[in-house]
Image (tube, rainbow, N blue to C red; front, top):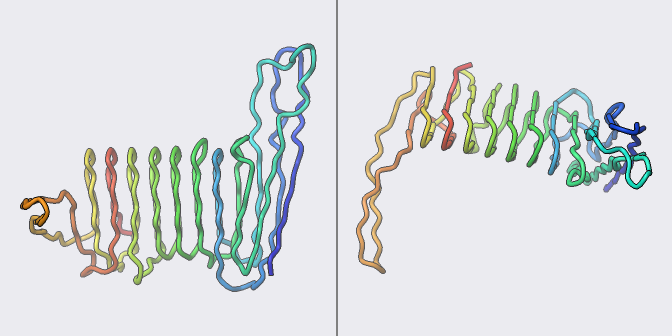
Length: 269
């Protein structure tokens, strides 16, 4: 079954002759019923401007609280006319067999989304400007991307592939998926992950300008130089990789972490 829920809210601002200050951000709520309540699904959201917060709860619906962040205007008039609106809040949600996609007009205005999902739900989230991505109390597969903001994930279980360019990446696992490798990267900030004490994992970490820290009793591995032969150019190349390899509790799924300007921290829960 395919369901589409759509809202458009007109955001009006009362203006003075000198300056306009929003009297409150425009807010709306959508409730999306699932085709198969109680079963797993996936949520997909992408924002150009704004933040995304996703929280797992015991319910069987997707609850979306959308807020358009108003701008402050110094010029309230144009050719003697007063400003009466700054745009619209346009949010829609499409559901098909427990796959939910949220669309917004965040390319025009900064929109913050606060979303509640059933605890067993996979997430595909992305943001670019003026916002962070926060995930709490969710179990699933996570594909998370941010450009100019932080990624913070707490009390989550499953597998994570996450990257951010100009923001810290923090992941606190309550349980890891022992069958799927993970990859985490942040170009200009730290990567900080917390794993349960009994986790079995192989850490592959690299930071060009930062350091690597852990409080686990990690067994480091020495890797031989990598040899590359080229039959076309008849060249022989020996390369020493800068990756640090370490095993936690004998090793297990690979968790790859890479940063350029930040530190990498692996904590024991």
